[in-house]
Image 1: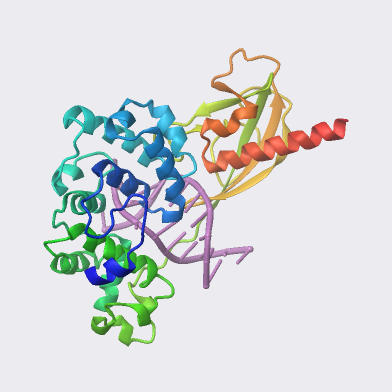
Image 2: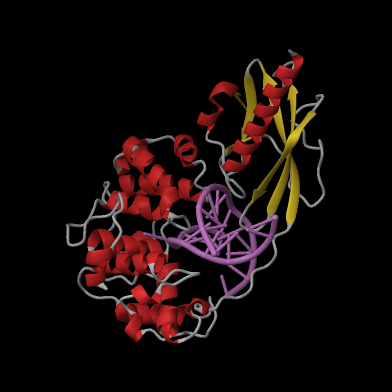
Length: 343
DNA sequence: CATGCGTGGCA
DNA sequence: TTGCCAAGCAT
């Protein structure tokens, strides 16, 4: 695996060259949090933006949480951003700005679980930690043609991964396994002819290696409906901050009421007004799909309106999650169209 | 241990 | 078009 990695490992902004000294633990940690359930391509621009703006853990700890949340907008799973900031503050205040070097110490920090703790310990500190992510699960399940479905197979997969983990170049080994899973032993179309582990792989002997790991069927996603309210006053639009827990927690948003099976209409409008339909945004979340009707009105006053007024011309800087960025784009497009009609 | 939590790309 | 998937964590 290490020979294969030396010749075929990916070059990534947060990664040292094979055999080089370990990279900055701050950068390893930041990249690992961003990469949770997220593709390398999606992470790259965010990693660049964060490291330029906050080049070390103390700088990130000193930032306002609202700025960190806004900078994360679009990357998804927003609890990660809140935990990222909390972790930076914990490392700065409790550890003098130095990350703990053991899996156990790392695991106690917010946002760092079994995988991320092991990955940082191995990649940044050379600890012989067993790094088991979805790539490693897939590679191991195929090596042994494990018929037990996930998640029940996890204890067995972990035991095998621990046996495979070497004592030296632990970070390179972990990244080698993940690169193999990402480039050769892929979920849908594994390229067994190019695989360095083919000789010892049980799944490669079958007619369908992609059948491993065995997974349970997924549930169908329900469709919910909601209404978002675009309220303008003197070139500014009303934004609110969503509750810290739950969907899009802690993010700026357009006011919108409950999302339910039945369309809520104007029931949760922030003010009484003549609302005009501006269209519907479709968006798919992890466990449901949403049809969000966008309605708009111009407020005569700001009296009694809860929220934050944001200049419409700089709405991109508000850090809206993608759902509400789509809704805002729709509201503005319709607004331009209406002005042109008026002329 | 099951569930909730984003987003964009791809077959 | 639709479903699946990507370096998981918290509860």
